[in-house]
Image 1 (cartoon, rainbow, N blue to C red):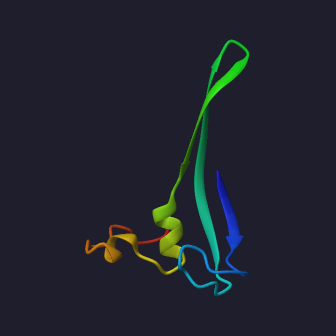
Image 2: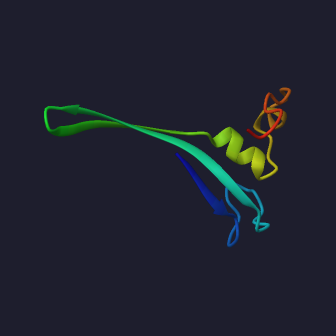
Length: 71
């Protein structure tokens, strides 16, 4: 699943709000026992999302960026 947002109102994690649109890829997994949901895992592609907001996580920590192009 992918969610598309626009960064409008306030800064987030020190990233200035410039009105840019970005997409966040997420995956939501559940484990159930019988008819009861007992565990949940949510994976969020924050590295790609931050790259779309012009923040390169790898560059910030002194590593070459491995995100070459938007899929």
